[in-house]
Each structure stands twice: as structure tokens, then as C-alpha cells.
Amino acid sequence: MSIDEYLQSLIPERNGLIAEMEEYARLHNVPIMEPEGMETLLQILRLKNPQAILEVGAAIGYSALRMAEAFPNVKIVTIERDEERIGVAKENISKACAQDRVILIEGDALEVTESIKDYGTFDAIFIDAAKGQYRKFFELYEPFLNDSGIIVTDNVLFKGLVAVPEEEIEPRRIRSLVRKIKEYNVWLHNHPDYDTVILPIGDGVAISKHRGQRK
Ligand code: SAH
Ligand code: MG
Image (cartoon, rainbow, N blue to C red; front, side, top):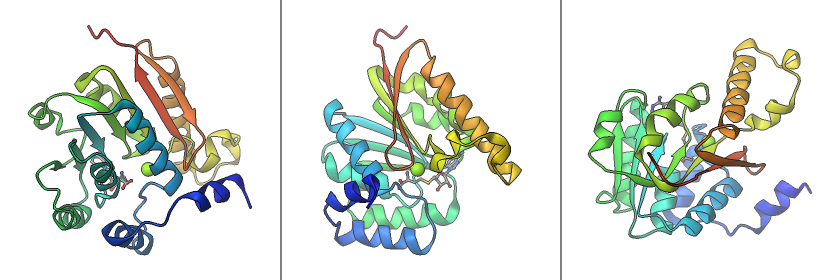
């Protein structure tokens, strides 16, 4: 058994709507957070005790509803551009009776920055959308983060490919995506306003904490 499998075996089974969503994701190849990554994200958020969270990449609303369940009084704004997933996410959000505090913004995260302004600032931002655009998402939404807030980015180890010599990575499209993630990770680690650590959990989770005193 690998350490990953062992850690996964410790996580209690989910049930009800959450379990249904996991099954849907498996059947339809929706890349929702893996169990250890999800638990890690929730734990980091518990330490932060947020009031408002912004998510880039809702998919079918799985991680948004996990956060909503973990924090009953928190407002979650989440962005998704895929029509089909938007439909499924809406259904799930209403099944969870969470419409009043899980707000789904329909559109491309690179274009909907204006509508996010209406929802104020956030204590945490979770970036989990197109890997090639991570730095853009970070730069676009980071101004909405409160002093000392945290930004969590998923999939920053890209199935371990970040540690594989580039010339061995095929096809070319994946190679260039890996390069972008690696550039993002370096950029994050050198950001003057944030301290960043990557946890090798799930598909790699980067935790960036704002140093405080925003300009
Ligand atoms: N956070 C979700 C999984 C998100 S999967 C969970 O763990 O449950 C990534 C999602 O980001 C996909 O559904 C994809 O359609 C969406 N996405 C990718 N690029 C985007 C963009 N530029 N704007 C909005 N959504 C985007
Ligand atoms: Mg992810």
C-alpha cells in the first residue's frame, strides 16, 4: 500500500448528495478534488476560519458544496464556464439547499472579474481551473483577497509530471502545460507578497498566504 492509499483509507466514506456527486464525477470524468486534497483544503480553511471564499473552477459544484457543508455560515462565490457543468452544478446547489450562499458565476474566469466586485472581498481563494492560466487567475483575483488571506491552488504537481525531464513528456501539449505549471510554481514561490508551500497531497496543493498589510 502506498502512503497515498493509506491516507485515503483513513478518510471516512461520504454519503448522500456528496457521494452521488463523486459517482457522477467518476462516470463523467469530471476532475473534482481527490479525497486527501479535499480534506487538506478544508483543514486549511478551518485554520483560517473564513467568512467568504472565492473559487475559480466550480465544475459540478463538488468542492464548493464540500466547503459549504464544512462552513455553514460562509458565503462561497464560484466561477464556471462549461455549460453542461453549470447545469449540473446548479442542480446540486439547489439539492443541497445552498442557493442563498453558494453563488455560481457563469462565464470565463478571465472575463467575469467585474461581476466578482459585487461580492466584496474574500478570506480565501481556491484556484482549480485551466492549468495554463493559473498565473492570470491569481493576478486577476488576488486583489479581492483580504489582508493575510490565503490562496490555495490545486493540481500544481500535475500527476508528478513537474518532476519528469521535459523531453520525456509526450504529447507536446502536455509538455507545454507542465512547463506553465512549473513557471507558476516558481513565480508563486518568489511572489513578494505571499509565502507559499506546496503539499504533495492529491495532485499537489499550493498554499499561499498573504503577508498582510495590503497597499
Ligand atoms: N473545483 C472543482 C473541480 C474543478 S475542475 C471540484 O473540485 O469539485 C476545473 C473546472 O474549471 C472545469 O469544470 C472547467 O470547465 C473550469 N474552467 C477551466 N477554465 C476556466 C475558466 N477560464 N473560467 C471558468 N471556468 C473554467
Ligand atoms: Mg483540481
